[in-house]
Each structure stands twice: as C-alpha cells, then as structure tokens.
Image 1 (cartoon, rainbow, N blue to C red):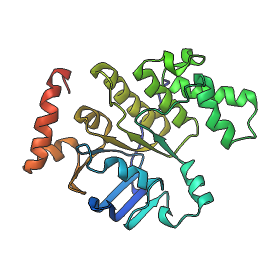
Image 2 (image 1 turned 60 degrees about the vertical axis):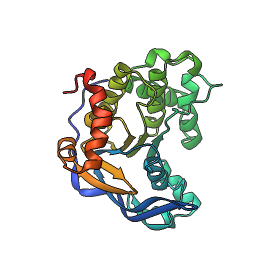
Image 3 (image 1 turned 45 degrees about the horizontal axis):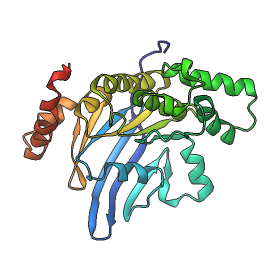
Length: 265
C-alpha cells in the first residue's frame, strides 16, 4: 500500500449521530437508550460481550433493522425516515464488512470485486473496472490473488478480499463486524494493521464491532464499551480501562490477560 498523509479527525463534523436508541426482540431488551457519535475520519471500536447488541447497533445504522425508539443520523440523513431509493443511495456511501466476509463462492476474486462496481456504476468501461479492481486489491496487498476462487484463500485473505470489495465503492464510512473473528493472532494483527492503513489511505470513518481487546486497542481512536444495552464508557483505550467499574475490569481481565503473549504495545 502506498504511503499517504496521516488521516485527520474532524471533531466538528459527525458522520453518525445516534440519540436515545432502543431495540427489543420480543421480551428481550437489547439496546436501552444508546447515544453515540462518530466523527469524520475517526475509528471507534465498539466493545461488548457476545449478545450485547453490537451487531444489532450497526445493522440499525444502515437500515437493516428498525429501532423501536430514538434517532439515527448517518451522513446527515435520518435513516428511519428514508424511502427505499434514498436508503439504497445512502448504503452506497457506507461499506459493511460482514463477519463472514460474504464472498460469492462461485465467483473468483476479480468477479467478486467487479460485481458491485458494475451493478452501481454501469457507465464504467472494462478498463476502468480493471483499474478499480486492481487498486482495491493493491490496498489490501493481494493483487496476485485476482484470479483465485474464495475456497482457495486463507481466512485472513478472505477478510482482506472482503475489505477490498467494500473499498471498491469508495465508502465514506466502513462498518466492520468482528473483523478478527476466527483468525489466529498473527493474522488478526495483520487485519488490525490493514484497518488502520485503510483509514490512513482513504480517510474513512469506521465503527469496528469487536470483543477482541487487541483489535480495539490497535484500530480504535476511541473505545465505546457496550454493557446492558447502553454505552457505559467512551474514550481512549487507556481511559476506558482505567475505570474502576467492576464490569469493565472483569471484561478486561477475562479477555486481555489471555492476550498477554501477543506483546501488545
């Protein structure tokens, strides 16, 4: 990846603004009044236990789920008020990296990347599509895999190709759902570095959903701790885990001590 100027966070411009967000499923209250802001150029890692509502939160951000209460503004659009065409247009500006990477098994890497491009930008020539595909692959360091099938890729390579497919539409916001899930420590570290490199190169704003403390420490400009349906602490990694809150301390002790061999700096 070619070197770019360091990204800048604009604290005067929010790209996601959420107030009073509530969501329940039958008798289960998942989100209980969530307030959240993501600024232009910023990465926020959302931490929480499995089932805490992290994935529900980002699905609401792109209109895949509707909240029961509260307001969700994404790129100055109130998501809950958008009509179908308006919502589709907004989603083109927001990249969503699914936990599974969601590649089409019947398509090779080139086809996986070119498919969303030709579907949304039908005016592009074959040469222009090729250029976009190779640029996206270069961004994740996998240009040599352009003709490979997903089944022939490692788990880390599939994650990278998933990121490349997200990047090809040049989103302003990227939502990462458990980007290091199922990966070994070395590959996880490579994905963490890639998330930062994408932020630097494209000046994206990102929400990284994770229960991996190493991932949150390396990718997040801020950490948002989700517990019992609300954010109980938002700040730098050091600030969040300096808290005397027993729930935060127990989350750190359970997850982070096991990562001591990773030599986190």
